[in-house]
Image (cartoon, rainbow, N blue to C red):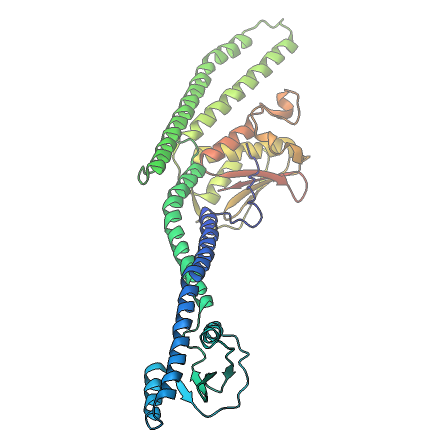
Length: 431
């Protein structure tokens, strides 16, 4: 049947490919894992370390101030130099008029809290040009200790970016590797299933890979082999029966010719019409069987089409922009039967037929009544006729277009029907 291929539309927002869907699923799950990991890292690792570090830093600041106060005045400059070189801390007795810190530094806030706990009073944190200063009263002195603003700062955002970024990259590469190994055999099966037309010479799928894919390939090869055998047996049986019917049909024609002249002429005419219908059915069956069992060969397309249409008594116009040197690989008997049936159908229903030869298709147009859209899929069914009468003069056997469609399927061609520009029907045969 020439049925319109309906592609299943994927759900909104979901990728159509297996790779896309798997990557999306793994990406979402990895994102959730990254978020949970970041939160757990912050709660159970970063925060405790930051708290501990701030407590140690506060102890160092207080101890440094205590030591500075207890040292003799002459030794203090040496201690300040050692403190700056070893711990990046600046102790100043001179009071600087600085504003309080308003910028947000997580570690500095923790340090302020720990200093307040150790000093038993609120410690002011001041914002300097290059350093952050802490006001620490110690003994009779008001000392200021300066340190870098990004000193041991908590970079949770960067940690999250690194985890999510690297995680997404690893998930994508992993899913790409896994899905390619799974999808490639599935794509091969899909392509082979799409190309399979019931012929016995189909190359079997390789039975390699994981156990499930090996089972799929083996079952597909078995199914294809059984279908090919079934079609071959059916075609052989049909051809044999059709061939064997020719003998009794010839005897019936001979007996009809030898009837006495006083036999009713109308009865003889009806018998002749029935025999003609039987002969047409047998010819169609034999032509179909012959067309399914041949190999494709290189044909000069224009010359071959021209040769076929010249066999009709009614004139058939051939239009082509192709040069005679253009060739195509086609099964000659099957292609001849397809084109003959289409042109004969056009002549029977439209009278005037035009065959247009294009680069990748053949178009047969007629000026008949056309084919209603409701019947365009049904006309390729065996014995279906828009004219429901069984009169051969108005519609033939009803097998012509069915044979066309089946031969096209077997040889990888596409046949469809539409409206001709000048009225009537247009059949499109794509190679």
